[in-house]
Image 1 (cartoon, helix red, strand yellow):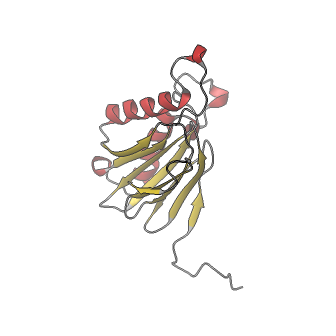
Image 2 (tube, helix red, strand yellow):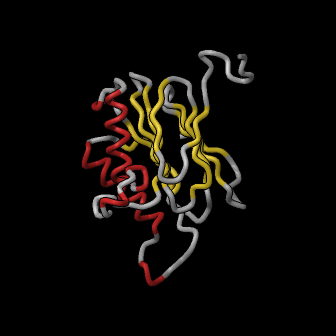
Amino acid sequence: MKTYGSEPGAPTSVQVGISELAVSDGDDTLKSYGLGSCLAIALYDPDGEIGGLAHAMLPDGDTATNSDRKPGKYADTAIRALLRRMVERGASYTSVEAKIAGGSDMFEFDSFGDGVGKRNADAAREELEKLGVPLVAEDVGGTHGRTVEFTPGTGTLLVKTSDEDENGVTEL
């Protein structure tokens, strides 16, 4: 049976939804849509051309109950799960680099202190530092949504913003 639009060996596009993560290699494109306070975490090994993308919703999974242990849901556990899966596919832990995007504070709730978006970005930075993974680029904060497209083979993270003043694409 012939499948149109996806030739053998052609790059594929994988959607990474909220609380999900995916690992791939080469020219595949990993995409996350509608990042508000959620954080996209892209890890890649430039030598092995292996990378992964997570769409983390909350900052700290270490305090989650056992019934709520989906690793992609939390910034800290998503980073550890991505690293583990990448190394299992042949990535070199010491070569891995990180990029993050999202973490907007789209709504203000004075009673909560720092917004979830800022806490997500802070948790990711802290976990990356703890694991010795350099954060080489970021596009975080603000009050606008984002969509990201990540190509593990090149480490390119395209960030599309949905801000009235800043409708555009940034390459990290």
